[in-house]
Amino acid sequence: MKWRVAALLGVMTVLTPQSGLVAQSVKAFEVASIRARDPRAASQTSSRVTGTRFELVNITPSALVARAFGIEESIRVVAPEWARRERFDIRAVLPKGASERDIPEMLQALLVERFGLDAHVERRPFPVYELLVSPSGPKLREVAGKDDLHSVFPTNPDRPPLDSIVGLPGDEARNIMRFDAEGGAMVRVTRQTLYTMVLTPPSGARRLDATRMTMRELAREIARSLDRPVIDNTGLDGIYRFETLLPPIRASAAMQAVLGGRLNTDPSGVSLSRSLEELGLKVEPRNSPVDFIVIDRIERPTPD
Image 1 (cartoon, one colour):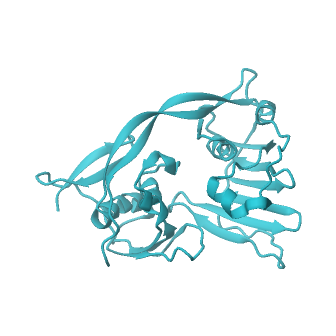
Image 2: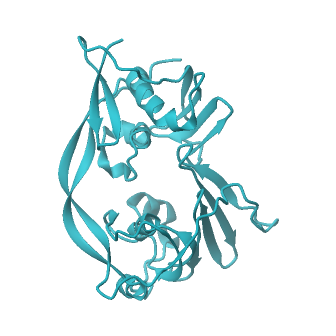
Image 3: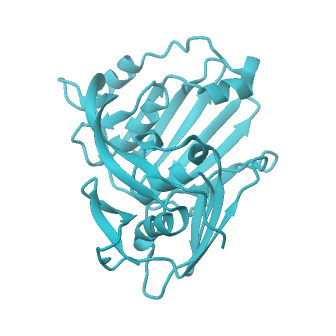
């Protein structure tokens, strides 16, 4: 088969069919099974590698594109409505000599082979917030990273946590959701960082205990309280220890429909600007040119 290979975001490649151009060496799964998922079956998206077997569960095609090309905000993938709604399970076998680091490239090839993906990149102005260092300078303590991804954490036997690993191999994150009579907490662990987010009812404010956290992770958590993505432009590339309060998670329309009257709408009283100021940080709104993956064509996957 022949392909066109084009640069994407300066990091990865996007593959689209085009006759007359010979493919460069493209890694692909040895074999892959794609199954449509029952929409009534609730589940978190998760992935794992066991030996040479790779499994990616409960993912939409648009989210698959985002993962394959390293896009953290799925809103930056412009896709048909069905590709944002329908979900699939993918089970595949890695070829001999392939490593976990090759999986994104193999997902790219899978998208072209089985979903008929044709896409291009557009740089568009997009409303974002920038996370910046305030004029007073950062007030953060830098610490060393530590791999706790597979550590055992204490749990309440009466209320077992939801414990899942998400993300592509080599860039996994473990989410441990704990619930009790007073509220809930999420522990997020990567191969270098660990932080706990505690919900504080009735306001819904979030208490962040960052044992080890990057500014990129903080930007992602701040964005959950706001109406647009947050871009880390602090220039701080270390891992830091700190504590702060963040406003409640901004509820999507879907979440509002599900929770109804149980959704708290009272102001939390938490000032994001004040919380960040105590860390020597700030956020500022701006329109920033951002790369979008625009899907020109995508089809429901071919049968196994």
